[in-house]
Amino acid sequence: MRYARDLFDDFPDPDVFLWNAIIRCHSRHNLFRDALGLYSKMQLLWVSPDSFTFTCVLKACSALPSLEMGRRVQCQILRRGFDSDVFVQNGLVTFYAKCGEIELANKVFWRLSERTIVTWTSMISGYVQNGQPLEALRVYGQMRKTNMKPEWITFVSVLKACTDLEGLEGGESIHGCAIKMGFELEPDLVVAFTAFYAKCGLVTVARLFFDLVETPNLVLWNAMISGYSKNGLAQEAIELFRRMVKKNVILDSISVTSTISACGQVGSIDLAKWMDEYIASSEFKDAVVVNTALIDMYAKCGSINLSRDVFNRTKDKDVVMWSAMIAAYAVHGEGQEAIDLFKAMRKAGVPPNDVTFVSLLSACKHSGLVEDGWKLFHCMSEYSIQPRHQHYACVVDLLGRAGYLDRAYEFIRNMPMEPGLSIWGALLTACKIHQHVPLGELAAERLFSLDPYSTGHHVQLSNIYASARMWDRVSKLRVLMKEKGLSKDLGYSSIEINGKLQVFQVGDKSHPRFKEIFEELESLERRLKEAGFSIDAESVLHDLDHEETEETLCNHSERIAIAYGLISTPPGTTLRIIKNLRACVNCHAAIKLISKVENREIVVRDANRFHHFKDGNCSCGDYW
Image 1 (cartoon, one colour):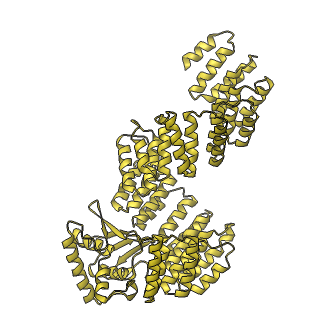
Image 2 (tube, rainbow, N blue to C red; image 1 turned 90 degrees about the horizontal axis):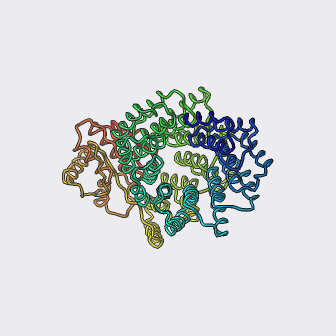
Image 3 (spheres, rainbow, N blue to C red; image 1 turned 180 degrees about the vertical axis):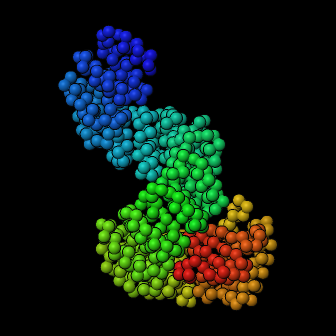
């Protein structure tokens, strides 16, 4: 670069071609300010620019970006009569789009008498870059009507729009066009296809594209890891991250936070600590967004103390981090700690946002802090925050769990918006807890009209009927579910022993050690009975005789996972269980007693929250 500049400076009177060459040279080497400096010097020497000059200069203005300089250049373009030059106008469209002035780009675009594929692509790309994917697709549709043949770079922008909208059908159509035109294996398109299919949940297809690339770039790695993580394939995301590290690929915050999220899904405290140690030795150790993800990860892995350690060691905490720590307390049922942290947040001068209040209200509902939650809901206006559906749902849950069902229903009736699924769902759950059949039927009726094919809502109503011994209505509801093609989600529980995850279903005898497991279960049941344990009648959700009921409840997946943990670890070892569904009342009562009989701490993460069982008690205080 320096050699080229020296040669240029040796010319006593360089013409426009030499000026263009040196400006373009600086621009290609990302020396955009130098390129603009040369352009200014060229004007001072009264050298008249041509279309190539303006194209290079606009590229430099776009890259910086420099809106003010670009507007001056546009004035010169008009003054010198290049307002109809296609290449120069393409540069203007790109310039305004990259500067966020999409409406000005649009005006330039539609003033053109002739539009090339570059012009159309610039406009489509501009809309995508400015967060308007629907407009990008609209312009693409207009382009196709002109019979303009797209280039592969056009498809990259259109696919990005489909990815942002998660529009599977549109993206698959673009894929078909790309195949027909022979563009499918263009490197940038392969990246776009990977990101698109990963975002739309078709991670197997995304992986096929990923594996086509001999040396994936960071964007490709991130698309694949994020796709796995967001679609529940946490182990695959972590495996890919390990491979990425092994290949010494330079990471960014997206790579790291996506993998941290995957670690939280797995629920392994050992894996979480490994990830934390990796971060501690990396450039991301002080990144707020990464540490916020670590707080959430540790909370999901059952360690609220480690979440708080990350929170305490982070210096510059933003509202997202404060809210994440409050949410961590909420999911672990530590409502008072959440409220105390909120007070500290206000004292630190950090204003809360709407997410902060969702976390606070969740903490109150899980801990039975009805009056505290009620006050917090009504103080949102002090921060100019308008309650959303999620806030209203939390309040309904807060009142309903505490047994204030009529008050909760009245609250729903007085809402300033139409109640949605989350509102009626919270009321239905409360009716299940307190066996309120009429109000439960009303809530279920609203839910069925909003979402007729939700298995969970049908099961909730069935459980309400079963708790009230209304077996004829249970039977009718099951017939209705069968007619709709609905089936109850299969429950499972997992436990990690020596770094290996074991998964069990109800009555599961597939494990190589199943004989030992069920012997331990029988031994446990004997000891529980000796300690005075009896089956909770509310757990009997099927019309079975006592012997069948007892056998069914003892073989729930979390009980099997605990039995396996007891025979696989030394006495006193904490057992950590993850269950995909909500634990039943009987198992909750049994695990409390198991923790006392076995002198173990047992941590169970169910579909809603964490339960820390120790010395015959649960952290939820039986308020769940």
